[in-house]
Amino acid sequence: MHSPEWHRLTEDEITHIIRVFNNQFIFEHTEDALNRASIIIKLCNDREVKVATTAFYNECIRMNVYMNKRDAAYKIKEDMDAGVYGVDVRSDIYTYTSIFSDTNAKTSEDLARLVEFYDEMLSRGIEPTELAKKPLIKLARKVGEHRLLKALLESPETEKLTTLHAATAARMLSNRAQAFIAEYDVDGAKSQLEQLLMYHIPKDTRAVPFSPGYSVGSADIKIPLEFTRTREAFFIYTRSLYESIMRIYIIRRRANDAHELLDDMRRTIYLPPTRMAYNWFIRFHAKRKNIQKLHEMHDMMLQDGVMPDEYAYTKFITSCMYHPNPSRLQKLVDTATRRAYFGAKDEEHEPTVGLDEPEGVHSSGLPDVPRHITELANIHNIVYHPQACTRFYKSMFLEHEADIDDLRSEKCQPNAHIINSVMCAYTMLEKPVLVLREFQRFVRYQHRLSPHQRPPDLMKSIIPVAHIFKMALDAARVINNQWMARKILAQMDVWGVRLPNPISKEA
Image (cartoon, rainbow, N blue to C red; front, side, top):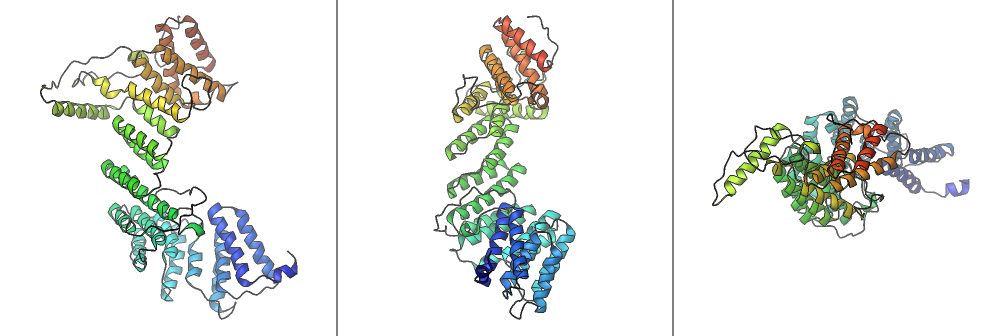
C-alpha cells in the first residue's frame, strides 16, 4: 500500500476495514481475517496514524479478544478510560460488548472476570443490550450458573420494540428462549415463542445467501449482518426456536406436544423443518416401532421437500424388523390387545390364544418371540412389518432416482443394517430370489469400497453381516442354487465371516 493512498483513508474507513475482518472471523472462523486486521493496526502504529474515535478502539478490543489476547484488550480499555487516546474516546456499551464477545471463555473463572466488567458497566449507568448479554447468557449456561442466567433474563428489552421490529425481536426472543431451555423451563421458552408470533413479518424479501449453520438447542445462528433484518432471517430465528422447544418435548417423551408444535410451525412459517428436527421424531417413533407415525413423518418430509438422509432411511427400514427388548415387546402386545378388545364391536376378544409362529423366522436371523407372550395369535404381525420395510426401501431408491433392480448403480448404496432388515423382510415374505438380489448388492457395494482388502463395514457391523450371509445361504438352498451357495461360502472364507449359529456348509 503506497503512502499517498494510505493517508487518503479516513478514520471511519479504517474502522470499517477492521470491522469487516472481525465479522469475517465470526462468520467464517478464518484466522487470516484476524491476521489482516492486525496488519492494518500495525500499519497505523508504524505510520503514526492518530485515530480519535471510540469505534476504532472497540474494534481493536474485539480483534484482541478473538485472538485470545485478553491483556492487550483490557489495556486498550484502560487507556480509553484514562484519556490516552483523547477526551472524546470513552468506553461505551459497544466497548463492553466487545469484551463480552470472548469466544475463548469457557470456565467459571472466565465468567467471573466478565461479570466484573458487567457490574462496572452497570455502575457507570450504561444500560445493557441484548447483544451485550448474549455471550454472558451462553457462557453462564455452559458453566451452569443458573442464578446469573435468571438475573440476565429479568430485564425485558423487547418491551421497547414495536411490532414492526420483528427481526430484532426474533433475535432477542430466540436468544432469551434458549436460556429458558437451559433452565429446563419449557413454558418460559414457549411464552417467548408466543410473543414472537405477535410481530409483523418483515417486508425485506432478500434471501440469505447461504444455508445458515447453527447448533439447534443454542442461539448460535450464523446470518450475515446485512441480512439480519430480512423476512428469511425472521423465519430462521423462529424455526430455531420452534425446533429447540420440540427437542425438549421429545427428550421428555411428550410426543403429542412436539407433534402439535411441528404442525403449528408448518402452518406458521414458510421454511420447512430441518432434516435434524425430522430425525428426532423418526428416532423417537422408530425406537417404539410406531410404524404408522413413521409413515406420517416420511410423507411430511416429502411434502416439505426435505429428502430423508441415510440416518432417516436406516431408522425407517430397521424399525420395521428389529426385535424389541422384553419390556418394549410387552408394551406392544398390551397396546395391540387393548386396540383389539375395545375396537371389536360384535366379536368377543380372546385375550389368550395360542402362538402361531410362521415359517422362516429361525432362518431369517430374527429372534424368537418369547413363549410366555400369548395374548394375540398374530403376534408377529405386531412385532415385524415386512411389507412396510420393503415399501420404505423402494421409496429410498425412488428418492435417489435409482433402479432397484440395477445392482451396479451407485446412486443408492444401502448400508449393512438396511440390507439386513430388507433381507429379513423378503425372507418372511418367502421371496428367496429377492433375498439373493440384496445379498449381491451388498457384496458389490463392499467390493467397491475396498477392492483389495476386507471392507471396514464388516468390522463395524459384525452381527448384521453374519445374518446377511446366513439368510443368503438359506435362500440359495431354498431355490436349490448350488452354485450360489458355494459362492457365498467362498466369500465368507475370503472375508472371514462367521455365521451367528452353527450351520452345515455342505451344499
